Length: 180
Image 1 (cartoon, helix red, strand yellow):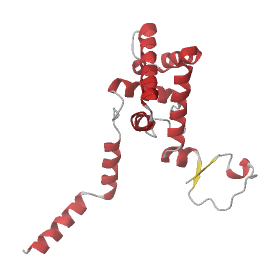
Image 2 (cartoon, rainbow, N blue to C red; image 1 turned 60 degrees about the vertical axis):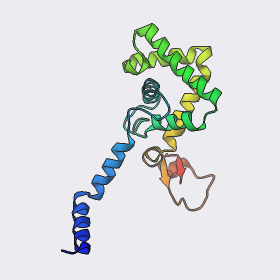
Image 3 (tube, rainbow, N blue to C red; image 1 turned 180 degrees about the vertical axis):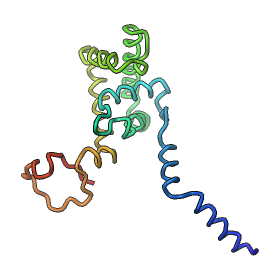
Image 4 (cartoon, rainbow, N blue to C red; image 1 turned 90 degrees about the vertical axis):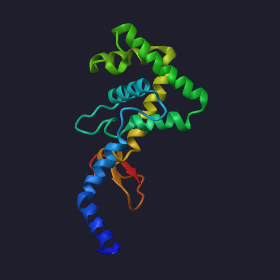
């Protein structure tokens, strides 16, 4: 067997073993993680739990299905100024401190009902309203700009055709549009 034949056989063997669907699944699993690159493990768990309570999965995908915690992690680590990142990290610490004080556990370990009560208390605290607005905005932005949010929740059309600013929503199945 010559070198060319050996390379052909190796390529064939690898092609059979590495089916495209298997490669896609493996890459998707590699992208999902229980921790971020910039947030600590505890901060990432808190962001994940809070994002899940802001946009839980129902009959439509939720924030975790769209990997929103990874989006927040990237914004935190790469795009926030130092003072914004410090404020955001302090907000996460305050959420966990309040959860430990009230319920004896960090936010990520609370039941859904407990987490909802803690979020309501967070919204009502004057000192945490800025953090709450920032996190909620990041979660919503991360979800609705993701492929999951655009294609499965919004009415995604990569080539939308003509622009009609007065089109009744009823003509498009009462679904808002996301253009790509």
